[in-house]
Length: 142
Image 1 (cartoon, rainbow, N blue to C red):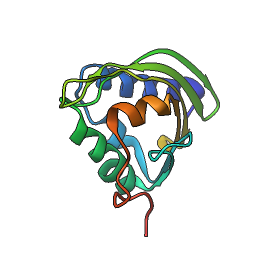
Image 2 (cartoon, rainbow, N blue to C red):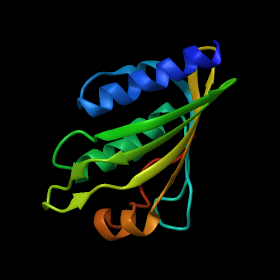
Image 3 (spheres, one colour):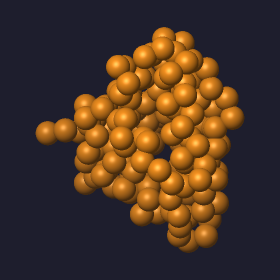
C-alpha cells in the first residue's frame, strides 16, 4: 500500500475511536502484530500477537474505563509503511476519574496489515489513574 493509503487506514481507525465504534483496528491487525508501550512503568513492554493486544492490553484497559476507549487524533504524518499520529485521550474511568493522556504513536502498516504500534505517552499518568498492569495478563504469544 502507498503511504497515503496507510494514512487513510490509520485515520479511519481514529475516526472509529472518536465515535467509540467500529472494528477497523481489529480487522486490519496482523496476527503477529506487536504493540510496544514505551516507558518504565508496569504497563511498559511489548504485547506480541493479536490476542495479547486485544485480550491482554485492551481488555484490561476496557475493564477500567466507563466506556469504550476514545482517542482523538489531530496530526497524521505518513512515509512509506510508517504513519505517525499525535492524539489525545478523552476517557473516564469507572471510578469517575479523567484519563486524558497525550500520545505520539508510530504505526507500521505492511501489505495492508498493522504489524506494529509504538506508543509514547505520560506513563506516570497511566500508573496514577489506571494503576499497575496485572502481571497475569498475556503479553506474548506462547
